[in-house]
Image (cartoon, rainbow, N blue to C red; front, side):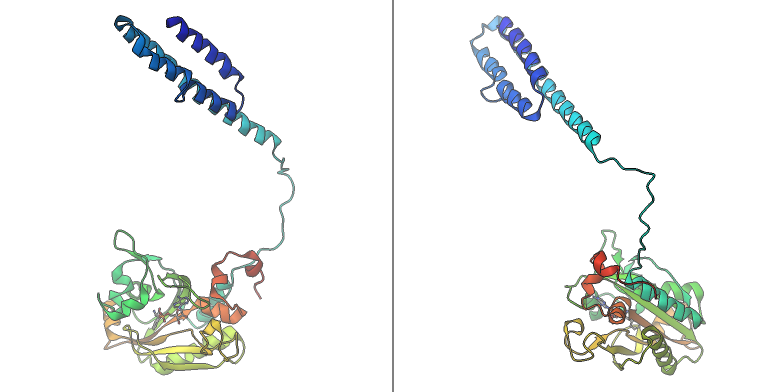
Length: 342
Ligand code: FA5
């Protein structure tokens, strides 16, 4: 049997040398290690070997088996490396000294409206603030007067991290930190990406942008709120647009309003972009609730203020006539590269 094992080893070595592609190596594997392979046959034949030689023959066959396994693995790797080399050598050669394509890129429409708004609010004395996307339950809800189990939370289901933090559902999540950072008087806007676990349609996305605004000072009233909203909208759209203000409930403002604009896609007739109502909810707002001021470290006896939460993504839709909000996150350059900074 010893000679038989040695003969098989030599045959394997020469056949392995000859196997120069993965199919041939696979055939070899089956021929030696498969159910009916030569090595397997040898192992089966051990039964017939006399007791005193069984151990030695068993060891020799196992050595051969390992040699075959290793040889096959090495050959597979060698073939893969050779194939890679071949591909690299035959790949198209690039000339790194050629000039780059200098055709102009473009800003995302949301970036354009955000920058325009930042300019408008800066000119009215507001600072521009940045804030995190991952926030605590306290920042997103409790600090804006939405305690645990409050029904207002149902409107803002979101994505939770295993440590209890969450992706912010609205830019109002930064109100508390910004009040604490600057105190009163305060004028600030803070744009940001928001996330909600909701089904998407032509005017709802699960990821969208808002711009929050806060103005806090002595004697701030609803007239100030209306003035700033009107100024902002007329500057953004650079034309007359029809707006309506109606009561709206948000636990962090009292009184609260919904500010809608007449849909500019359908001219108010009703279309999928405005859920066929002719109006688009754009900028809820209201007078900051005393509890929210208190939690922000500001004395509500001394100061009052207004807050708004502008839907930046929807504003971009209206300004640029984009019918479906989902186009804005599509990454489709054909659609998105049409918008240049005017
Ligand atoms: C809020 O998020 C409040 N934090 C806004 C606020 C701030 C009110 C300060 C009062 C004072 P609301 O859930 O309605 O409210 O969202 C505000 C705006 O964000 C909406 O009017 C809309 O323009 C935009 N928005 C909300 N959900 C989506 C969505 N899924 N897709 C796109 N835009 C959305």
